[in-house]
Length: 250
Length: 255
Ligand SMILES: Nc1ncnc2c1ncn2[C@@H]1O[C@H](COP(=O)(O)OP(=O)(O)OP(=O)(O)O)[C@@H](O)[C@H]1O
Ligand SMILES: [Mg+2]
Image (spheres, each protein chain N blue to C red):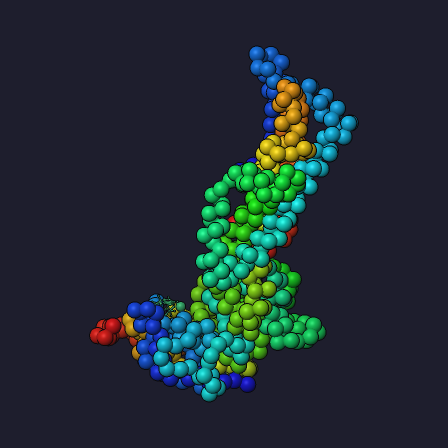
């Protein structure tokens, strides 16, 4: 971990080298992939026509709706599971079971039961976000330091106060990590879901492009997916460091 | 204002382990009692009973004549691991008890100002615990316990993790506060010197089963000073405690 301060500079160099490599490989070898110029041109075209932004908007709307619904339900359920052993015993086996099913595998069932509109996609995202957040939340609650709870009790705190003033803040770091993982898996799941069943969105655009051997569009979509995923991750990471700056980091 | 603590025939079992057996002891109002003994002899168990964090399997613990049924702000506890709320500032930690007691903002402020000054942390009122040193954390924990205005202080190896110099300074601070307010104190330690220096009486515990072995009076004058710490009288009592702790009779046959 020496020389941390050189990292940003190294990142720029790495990015430039990557671009250069991409250019050289596509220009001077037999590999039949679009080069940076072709992708840039495509990008300008879809940006100007607005198609790119409607796709992004469609994908983001789905992922955010599903993610917010999923975590909004996961956090209270996670707290209940962490706080009451009985609830954990009853709910945990189901969560462990559904965690083993890739959310995408739910798509056929979701399409039959929920139709082909937005509902099945949002439901699948919801499930992906819910499952990762609920586990993180109840692990966080279970892991709350007993001495902190005892410290509050001997100062006169009852269960309600302990929950609100100790358990919630103490488990917040875990919950936020869960949200971050949840958002990541929601995004990955969404794009895949759009490949299978959608009339808009970045995944749908790639699916269309595939039919026409339109590789630059596929590249533009892939890059958009990566960049947006990175941006969302950064936003959650930023919230995480802001909200848990009290933690002792080693 | 202070209270007495009465252990009456107290036993605690953890499945097949007898953590405390037939423990009888009375801590008088305003008395400073220290408790020493080998690891696992039930010192923390005894303290948790008074704190109300644990119920005895037999017998009872009375505080001011009333059986302890649960924790309460009349008994302040200082844990070895500090147990500060890391997301609250030093001041908010200290105001935790007064806040639960329904004190107004202004009252809370006055209380925290007073106790932060007492422990010398006024300059760190708005800092988070993570920036404090071990000694400062423990001082904050002490201020937090005082701020709830308990009649009894229960301290479980509070200075165990501190360096010798900080430890001595905090001992003197604790004694001077105690001489002015005369709260009853039950103080657990591994350190024989500390046990003698602070106490009116030292309780020596034995292990397996956890039980009271010996009670040693410390008839040294107050205020305790460095001269007392280095005096032959101190050394004599210290030796008695040392012997009681480190040359315990072979374990009771029943265990
Ligand atoms: N909650 C518990 N469940 C089971 N056993 C316990 C529990 N708490 C304590 N014990 C056991 O009871 C015995 C007494 O524990 P206690 O913590 O009171 O010892 P102690 O005198 O404080 O020791 P130390 O000096 O190491 O802190 C130990 O053998 C311990 O393992
Ligand atoms: Mg102990």
